[in-house]
Amino acid sequence: QVQLVESGGGLVQPGESLRISCAASGFDFGISAMSWYRQTPGKERELVARISAAGSTKTYADSVKGRFTVGRVNSKNTMYLQMDSLKPEDTAVYYCNVRKGGVAPRDYWGQGTQVTVSS
Image 1 (cartoon, rainbow, N blue to C red):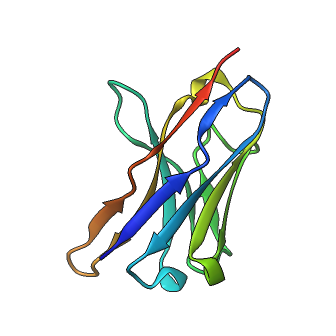
Image 2: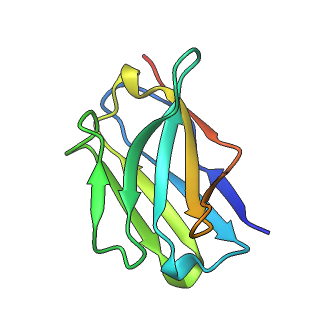
């Protein structure tokens, strides 16, 4: 079955960097586009970054462009999100996502990892 496990969250100060990772299993990772989302209490989950299966196409939310970099290592079934110049408004639970299912797609989510940016 599909499993997504995030790791690497924590508490950092504004302006610092953090790298979070997602370990995937139970599906063909190497042919699957992957995404990072984030959510804060009382708000809808928002898309942060998406990466194509081969890693050649990356898209970002306007709020993180130029500061965050999404990447993947298909040989290790791993996706990461390098977050630089972090701001307090980046504080959220970050989720790894994959959508599978063709005609009737379904979203799969990890358990999330908390990122807190505070002085």
